[in-house]
Image 1: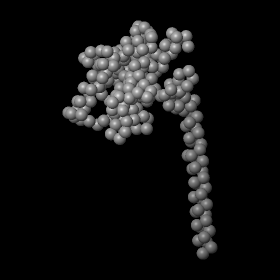
Image 2 (image 1 turned 90 degrees about the vertical axis):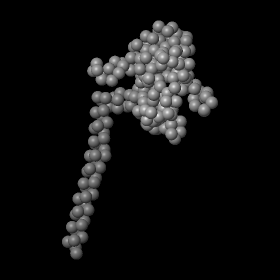
Image 3 (image 1 turned 120 degrees about the vertical axis):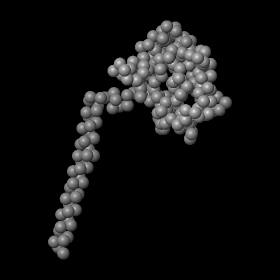
Image 4 (image 1 turned 180 degrees about the vertical axis):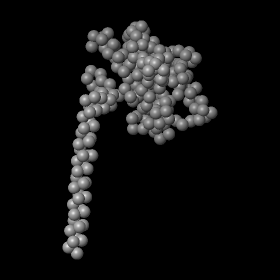
Length: 220
């Protein structure tokens, strides 16, 4: 009986020691080492690819966000886009539950089929709205202004979509069209390795540049 108790005690003690060692190694030492390496070698990415303006974090270059007017909504209760800023792609994230408008809480697409009547009506409505908002013919509205991304939080738009917004943004911020176009060109990234993906513009970084330029023009 005593031998049995001592055997159980030895096994329990060995298990407890293993638990403590593994907790220390896997729960403390390993996370600290990985975090230290990430902060030392990939500081920007490890901290969420933050975008800062005047020293304040205004978002992540990896996550799209909306640029709406405060306390202004359309007849359906949706926020109205602010004409001072470049606008992102439409977002369908969470649309079947509640209107998140690029909330980082959820991510997803509309999952509407290519032959969906709802999708067709939505695209037509978006084309009309984008054309009117930017004062361009409907034929100039690019496809990424009409369709939501698979993630619902795409931070990029195409150079074509940025180009049709230049005149509006310049006018609303009291800037020359040429100056704003230069910002678009400067913030246009090409294909990865020269052949992967499409040229794209990060909307948040572009809007920060617009704000800085406008502030400089005003002497702020």
